[in-house]
Length: 297
Image (cartoon, rainbow, N blue to C red; front, side):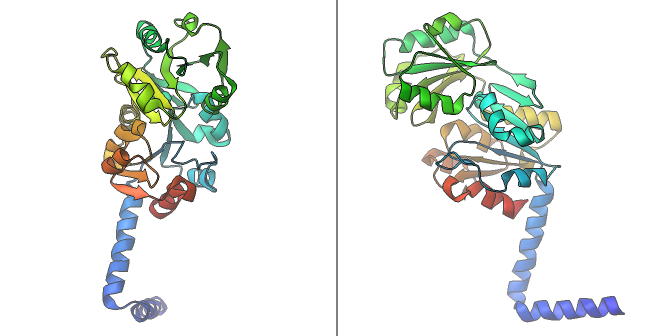
Protein backbone atom coordinates (compact mmCIF):
# COMPACT_ATOMS: atom_id res chain seq x y z
CA UNK A 1 0.00 0.00 0.00
CA UNK A 2 2.87 2.36 0.90
CA UNK A 3 4.62 1.73 -2.45
CA UNK A 4 1.42 2.43 -4.43
CA UNK A 5 0.86 5.64 -2.49
CA UNK A 6 4.43 6.75 -3.19
CA UNK A 7 3.98 6.13 -6.93
CA UNK A 8 0.76 8.16 -6.94
CA UNK A 9 2.45 11.04 -5.10
CA UNK A 10 5.41 11.04 -7.55
CA UNK A 11 3.02 10.92 -10.53
CA UNK A 12 1.04 13.89 -9.18
CA UNK A 13 4.26 15.86 -8.57
CA UNK A 14 5.53 15.14 -12.08
CA UNK A 15 2.21 16.18 -13.61
CA UNK A 16 2.26 19.35 -11.53
CA UNK A 17 5.83 20.18 -12.57
CA UNK A 18 5.38 19.25 -16.24
CA UNK A 19 2.30 19.86 -18.42
CA UNK A 20 1.22 16.67 -20.21
CA UNK A 21 3.05 17.49 -23.45
CA UNK A 22 6.24 18.47 -21.63
CA UNK A 23 6.09 15.32 -19.51
CA UNK A 24 5.63 13.21 -22.64
CA UNK A 25 8.67 14.72 -24.36
CA UNK A 26 10.71 14.56 -21.16
CA UNK A 27 10.00 10.83 -20.83
CA UNK A 28 10.73 10.36 -24.54
CA UNK A 29 14.07 12.11 -24.05
CA UNK A 30 14.92 9.81 -21.14
CA UNK A 31 13.97 6.77 -23.20
CA UNK A 32 16.13 7.86 -26.15
CA UNK A 33 19.02 8.68 -23.85
CA UNK A 34 18.72 5.24 -22.22
CA UNK A 35 18.61 3.60 -25.64
CA UNK A 36 21.75 5.44 -26.80
CA UNK A 37 23.56 4.64 -23.56
CA UNK A 38 22.76 0.96 -23.91
CA UNK A 39 23.99 0.83 -27.52
CA UNK A 40 27.33 2.65 -27.27
CA UNK A 41 30.21 0.18 -27.14
CA UNK A 42 33.03 2.25 -28.64
CA UNK A 43 34.04 5.91 -28.40
CA UNK A 44 36.83 7.19 -30.65
CA UNK A 45 38.32 10.67 -30.57
CA UNK A 46 41.04 12.54 -32.41
CA UNK A 47 43.61 14.50 -30.41
CA UNK A 48 44.70 17.89 -31.79
CA UNK A 49 41.79 20.22 -32.45
CA UNK A 50 39.35 17.71 -30.98
CA UNK A 51 39.89 16.44 -27.44
CA UNK A 52 42.89 18.73 -26.84
CA UNK A 53 42.22 22.45 -26.56
CA UNK A 54 44.32 25.14 -28.26
CA UNK A 55 46.82 24.97 -25.40
CA UNK A 56 47.12 21.18 -25.85
CA UNK A 57 45.26 20.40 -22.61
CA UNK A 58 42.89 17.48 -22.06
CA UNK A 59 39.43 18.29 -20.71
CA UNK A 60 38.91 17.95 -16.99
CA UNK A 61 37.40 14.65 -15.92
CA UNK A 62 38.26 12.72 -19.09
CA UNK A 63 40.27 10.02 -17.27
CA UNK A 64 37.50 9.58 -14.71
CA UNK A 65 34.91 9.36 -17.49
CA UNK A 66 36.89 6.58 -19.18
CA UNK A 67 37.47 4.66 -15.94
CA UNK A 68 33.78 4.85 -15.01
CA UNK A 69 32.70 3.10 -18.23
CA UNK A 70 34.63 -0.19 -18.33
CA UNK A 71 32.20 -1.74 -20.85
CA UNK A 72 32.95 0.92 -23.48
CA UNK A 73 36.05 0.69 -25.69
CA UNK A 74 37.73 4.11 -25.73
CA UNK A 75 39.95 4.67 -28.77
CA UNK A 76 42.50 7.47 -29.15
CA UNK A 77 42.86 8.04 -32.92
CA UNK A 78 45.64 10.37 -33.98
CA UNK A 79 48.29 11.19 -36.52
CA UNK A 80 50.68 11.44 -33.59
CA UNK A 81 53.34 8.91 -32.74
CA UNK A 82 52.20 6.12 -30.40
CA UNK A 83 54.77 7.11 -27.77
CA UNK A 84 53.45 10.66 -27.77
CA UNK A 85 49.96 9.35 -27.02
CA UNK A 86 51.30 6.98 -24.40
CA UNK A 87 53.03 9.87 -22.67
CA UNK A 88 49.74 11.78 -22.41
CA UNK A 89 47.53 8.86 -21.35
CA UNK A 90 50.02 6.83 -19.32
CA UNK A 91 47.91 6.71 -16.09
CA UNK A 92 45.07 4.93 -17.95
CA UNK A 93 46.94 3.45 -20.93
CA UNK A 94 45.65 -0.10 -20.32
CA UNK A 95 42.05 1.11 -20.57
CA UNK A 96 42.57 2.50 -24.08
CA UNK A 97 43.17 1.38 -27.64
CA UNK A 98 45.57 3.59 -29.60
CA UNK A 99 45.33 4.29 -33.32
CA UNK A 100 48.47 6.23 -34.17
CA UNK A 101 50.15 7.49 -37.34
CA UNK A 102 46.64 7.98 -38.81
CA UNK A 103 45.92 4.26 -38.68
CA UNK A 104 49.34 2.92 -39.63
CA UNK A 105 49.48 1.02 -36.35
CA UNK A 106 46.99 -0.01 -33.65
CA UNK A 107 48.25 -0.70 -30.14
CA UNK A 108 46.52 -2.17 -27.10
CA UNK A 109 48.27 -2.82 -23.79
CA UNK A 110 51.66 -2.20 -25.45
CA UNK A 111 51.03 -4.86 -28.08
CA UNK A 112 50.69 -4.36 -31.83
CA UNK A 113 47.28 -5.59 -32.98
CA UNK A 114 47.51 -4.22 -36.53
CA UNK A 115 50.21 -2.56 -38.66
CA UNK A 116 50.37 -1.33 -42.28
CA UNK A 117 53.75 0.26 -43.12
CA UNK A 118 54.75 2.38 -46.11
CA UNK A 119 56.96 0.39 -48.54
CA UNK A 120 60.57 1.58 -48.31
CA UNK A 121 60.91 2.13 -52.07
CA UNK A 122 57.78 4.31 -52.09
CA UNK A 123 59.05 6.37 -49.16
CA UNK A 124 62.26 7.09 -51.10
CA UNK A 125 60.19 8.24 -54.09
CA UNK A 126 58.34 10.78 -51.93
CA UNK A 127 61.57 12.01 -50.37
CA UNK A 128 62.96 12.59 -53.87
CA UNK A 129 59.85 14.58 -54.84
CA UNK A 130 60.24 17.09 -52.00
CA UNK A 131 64.01 17.13 -51.61
CA UNK A 132 64.53 20.31 -53.68
CA UNK A 133 62.15 22.43 -51.57
CA UNK A 134 64.04 23.72 -48.55
CA UNK A 135 60.81 24.84 -46.88
CA UNK A 136 59.51 21.27 -46.60
CA UNK A 137 60.77 19.12 -43.75
CA UNK A 138 60.09 15.34 -43.95
CA UNK A 139 59.59 13.33 -40.77
CA UNK A 140 59.80 9.55 -40.99
CA UNK A 141 57.37 8.21 -38.41
CA UNK A 142 58.63 4.69 -37.77
CA UNK A 143 57.51 1.96 -35.41
CA UNK A 144 60.30 2.48 -32.87
CA UNK A 145 61.09 6.18 -33.29
CA UNK A 146 60.81 9.12 -35.69
CA UNK A 147 63.55 10.77 -37.74
CA UNK A 148 64.09 14.27 -39.11
CA UNK A 149 66.99 15.78 -41.02
CA UNK A 150 68.60 18.60 -38.96
CA UNK A 151 65.70 21.10 -38.92
CA UNK A 152 65.72 24.71 -37.66
CA UNK A 153 64.64 25.19 -34.06
CA UNK A 154 61.09 26.37 -34.80
CA UNK A 155 60.42 23.25 -36.88
CA UNK A 156 61.97 20.99 -34.25
CA UNK A 157 59.74 22.50 -31.57
CA UNK A 158 56.60 21.81 -33.62
CA UNK A 159 57.64 18.29 -34.63
CA UNK A 160 58.55 17.38 -31.04
CA UNK A 161 54.95 18.08 -29.93
CA UNK A 162 53.81 15.01 -31.85
CA UNK A 163 56.89 12.79 -31.55
CA UNK A 164 58.22 11.96 -28.09
CA UNK A 165 60.81 9.65 -29.62
CA UNK A 166 62.63 11.73 -32.21
CA UNK A 167 66.13 11.54 -33.67
CA UNK A 168 67.90 14.03 -35.92
CA UNK A 169 70.02 12.64 -38.75
CA UNK A 170 72.29 14.11 -41.43
CA UNK A 171 70.62 12.18 -44.25
CA UNK A 172 67.02 11.05 -43.76
CA UNK A 173 67.22 8.63 -46.70
CA UNK A 174 69.90 6.69 -44.85
CA UNK A 175 67.43 5.44 -42.23
CA UNK A 176 64.97 4.01 -44.76
CA UNK A 177 64.98 0.23 -44.40
CA UNK A 178 66.01 0.23 -40.73
CA UNK A 179 62.47 0.23 -39.28
CA UNK A 180 58.84 0.01 -40.40
CA UNK A 181 57.78 3.39 -41.80
CA UNK A 182 54.23 4.07 -40.68
CA UNK A 183 53.88 7.67 -41.81
CA UNK A 184 55.97 10.04 -43.90
CA UNK A 185 54.89 13.40 -42.47
CA UNK A 186 55.80 16.54 -44.42
CA UNK A 187 55.96 19.86 -42.58
CA UNK A 188 55.64 23.28 -44.20
CA UNK A 189 54.85 26.13 -41.84
CA UNK A 190 51.12 26.98 -42.30
CA UNK A 191 51.30 26.35 -46.06
CA UNK A 192 50.99 22.58 -46.40
CA UNK A 193 47.94 22.61 -48.68
CA UNK A 194 49.45 24.94 -51.29
CA UNK A 195 53.13 24.01 -51.02
CA UNK A 196 53.11 20.24 -50.46
CA UNK A 197 49.98 18.67 -51.96
CA UNK A 198 50.68 19.84 -55.56
CA UNK A 199 54.10 18.15 -55.45
CA UNK A 200 52.45 14.85 -54.54
CA UNK A 201 49.79 14.86 -57.24
CA UNK A 202 51.49 12.01 -59.11
CA UNK A 203 52.59 9.78 -56.24
CA UNK A 204 52.19 6.04 -56.58
CA UNK A 205 48.75 4.51 -56.20
CA UNK A 206 50.17 2.51 -53.29
CA UNK A 207 50.30 5.74 -51.29
CA UNK A 208 48.04 8.67 -50.51
CA UNK A 209 48.62 12.17 -49.18
CA UNK A 210 46.30 13.51 -46.48
CA UNK A 211 46.13 17.07 -45.20
CA UNK A 212 46.21 16.52 -41.44
CA UNK A 213 46.73 20.11 -40.24
CA UNK A 214 47.53 23.55 -41.58
CA UNK A 215 51.26 22.78 -41.60
CA UNK A 216 51.19 19.03 -42.19
CA UNK A 217 50.61 16.52 -44.97
CA UNK A 218 50.83 12.83 -44.09
CA UNK A 219 51.88 10.33 -46.74
CA UNK A 220 50.68 6.87 -45.78
CA UNK A 221 49.84 3.47 -47.20
CA UNK A 222 46.84 3.90 -49.54
CA UNK A 223 44.79 1.48 -47.42
CA UNK A 224 45.57 3.27 -44.16
CA UNK A 225 43.18 5.68 -42.48
CA UNK A 226 41.55 6.02 -39.10
CA UNK A 227 38.31 4.64 -40.49
CA UNK A 228 39.88 1.35 -41.59
CA UNK A 229 41.61 1.12 -38.22
CA UNK A 230 38.22 1.51 -36.53
CA UNK A 231 36.91 -1.32 -38.75
CA UNK A 232 39.72 -3.58 -37.52
CA UNK A 233 38.75 -2.87 -33.90
CA UNK A 234 35.06 -3.36 -34.68
CA UNK A 235 35.82 -6.79 -36.19
CA UNK A 236 38.05 -7.86 -33.30
CA UNK A 237 35.44 -7.02 -30.66
CA UNK A 238 32.25 -7.70 -32.62
CA UNK A 239 31.08 -4.09 -32.49
CA UNK A 240 28.84 -2.67 -35.21
CA UNK A 241 29.26 0.86 -36.65
CA UNK A 242 25.89 1.78 -35.10
CA UNK A 243 27.38 1.11 -31.66
CA UNK A 244 30.26 3.56 -32.22
CA UNK A 245 30.70 7.27 -31.54
CA UNK A 246 33.53 9.32 -33.10
CA UNK A 247 34.81 12.89 -32.77
CA UNK A 248 37.10 14.69 -35.22
CA UNK A 249 38.07 18.03 -36.72
CA UNK A 250 40.29 17.57 -39.78
CA UNK A 251 40.52 15.68 -43.06
CA UNK A 252 42.41 12.71 -41.56
CA UNK A 253 39.27 12.07 -39.45
CA UNK A 254 36.96 11.82 -42.47
CA UNK A 255 36.78 8.01 -42.81
CA UNK A 256 36.57 7.51 -39.05
CA UNK A 257 33.45 9.66 -38.89
CA UNK A 258 32.00 7.77 -41.85
CA UNK A 259 32.52 4.41 -40.13
CA UNK A 260 30.84 5.34 -36.85
CA UNK A 261 27.05 5.56 -36.55
CA UNK A 262 27.18 8.57 -34.23
CA UNK A 263 29.70 11.06 -35.63
CA UNK A 264 30.57 14.51 -34.30
CA UNK A 265 32.54 17.28 -35.98
CA UNK A 266 33.89 19.89 -33.63
CA UNK A 267 32.60 23.44 -34.01
CA UNK A 268 36.16 24.40 -35.02
CA UNK A 269 36.36 21.59 -37.62
CA UNK A 270 37.20 21.81 -41.31
CA UNK A 271 34.07 22.49 -43.39
CA UNK A 272 34.31 19.12 -45.17
CA UNK A 273 34.34 17.32 -41.82
CA UNK A 274 31.20 19.18 -40.76
CA UNK A 275 29.51 17.95 -43.93
CA UNK A 276 30.25 14.27 -43.28
CA UNK A 277 29.47 14.31 -39.55
CA UNK A 278 26.00 13.59 -38.20
CA UNK A 279 26.26 16.21 -35.44
CA UNK A 280 28.28 19.31 -34.51
CA UNK A 281 29.91 19.29 -31.06
CA UNK A 282 31.03 22.43 -29.20
CA UNK A 283 34.59 23.51 -29.98
CA UNK A 284 37.71 21.90 -28.56
CA UNK A 285 38.30 25.01 -26.44
CA UNK A 286 34.86 24.50 -24.88
CA UNK A 287 35.62 20.85 -24.04
CA UNK A 288 33.14 19.75 -26.69
CA UNK A 289 34.01 16.06 -26.46
CA UNK A 290 33.35 15.98 -22.73
CA UNK A 291 30.12 17.96 -23.09
CA UNK A 292 28.76 15.35 -25.48
CA UNK A 293 30.04 12.34 -23.52
CA UNK A 294 28.36 13.59 -20.36
CA UNK A 295 25.05 13.60 -22.21
CA UNK A 296 25.29 10.25 -23.97
CA UNK A 297 27.19 8.04 -21.48
